[in-house]
Length: 501
Image 1 (cartoon, one colour):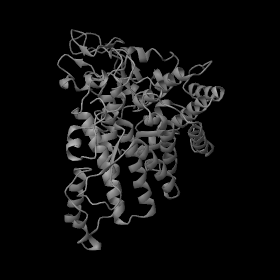
Image 2 (cartoon, one colour; image 1 turned 90 degrees about the vertical axis):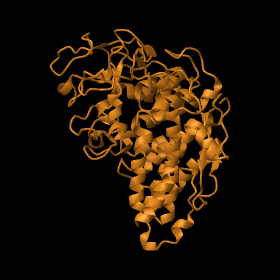
Image 3 (tube, helix red, strand yellow; image 1 turned 45 degrees about the vertical axis):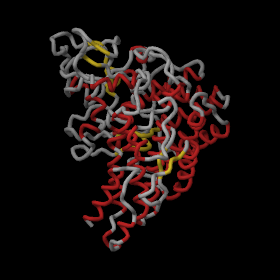
Image 4 (cartoon, one colour; image 1 turned 135 degrees about the vertical axis):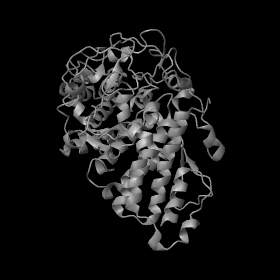
C-alpha cells in the first residue's frame, strides 16, 4: 500500500507531465489499491493552496483588477515587483504566482482523473468529476487553453490541450452527466446546486471565453442561466443573509443562509495555516492591530467611493470580532482603535489612520497608513493559524446577480433591476432607479469584492483593459489571457504560447 501511494503522489506532484506509466500500478494486487474516498479527501485538501492562498488564483483574479492593490511599502512587500506587475498588467511568462497557480490547478485536474481508475462509488466519482470541471474552468478562465488527459491515457504521452470551445463543452457535458449522482448536501462537498452554479457561470462567460476582445451573449445561453437560477431559487434552500458577513464568519457553515459550496476549514485542525482564509485578514491588517497583520494589501479609493454610506457591505461592527479587537468588518478607513476604543498608532508613533490615498510604490513617513484595508472574512480568534472560516466558492447572491445580468442582456432591464434592488435592500442600502451594464458591473463589485471574481467580471463587461487608479494607461489585448508558464511550454509541446507573450 505504501508503495502504491508513493507512486500516486509522485505522479500528482508533477501534474500533467510525468514519466510514470499506468502499467506501474497494474502489477499490484487489487487489495493494495488506494481507497477512492481517501483520495477524494486528498483532492479536497489539495484545493486549499491554489484557491485560498493570497498569492495564487485570488491574486490573479483580484490584484489584476480595480479593487485590490499590493503596494510596496518602503522595504516591505517589494518582492521584486511581483505584486506590482499584477496590478499594472506587466506580468510575463515567468511570473512565479501565475506559474504556481497554473501548475497547482492542473494537479487537481490530474488527481481527479487519476482517482477515477480505482472504481469509486457513483457519489465519489461524481464529486471528483465536478471538482475536475471546476479546476478546468479556472484554467480556461485564466489561460484560455487547458492541458487534459482522458481517463486511461498513458502518462508517457504528452497531455492533449483543450481549446476554449473544447473546455467549455467538457465542463457543460460533465455537469449534465454527473448531476444525478452528486449529493444534494453538505455545503462543503461538490453538490448538485454547486454544479448548477458552475454551469451558469460557464454559460454566462461563454461568449467572453470565445471572443475576449468583444464578448457576445447568446440569448439561448442567457435563458439557460435564468432557468438554472430559478431551479435554485425555487428550491427554497437559500435566502439572502440577515448579516452579510455571516457568509464569511468562523462558523459560516452553521449560520450562513447563502453559501452553496464552500471549502471546509476545521478550526484548530486544518486550513493550511498561512495559505488558508487566514491570509484574507493578515494580508491587510497593520502590525499593531489584533491580530498583528502583514500591513500589505489595500483597496483603491476610487473603488471604495462607489459605495453608499449606508451600505452594510462598506463596513460594520461584527460580534465576536469588534469587541475583541476594535476591528470592524468590511473596509477599514480612518483612525483605528482597540477593543476599548483607544486610538492605535503605527510603528513610528503616528496615528494609525488609514487613508484612501495610496500609491503602487510608497515612500516616506506615512507609508504604513496609506490605503483602505479590508476584512471581509471576520477574524477567528479561537483557533490559531488553522481557522474555522470555510472558504466560499459559490453563494446565493451570485445566483441572483447572474440571473439579473442574464435578464438584462436579454432585454429585461426591469426584471434585472428588481433583483439587484432585492440584494441592495438586504444590505441596508437604497434602491437603484435604473440598470445598465456599467451599473451592473459596479454592483457586482460592491457585492463580491475580494471574493476572487473581479477579473472575470471585468473581462465579461469589456473593462479589464481599461486604465484605473495606479494602473495608468490601458493594457494591450494580450492581457486578456495569462501567458503559459515557460516551464510548461518546455515540458508539453502540445501547449502554445498565447499571443503577445
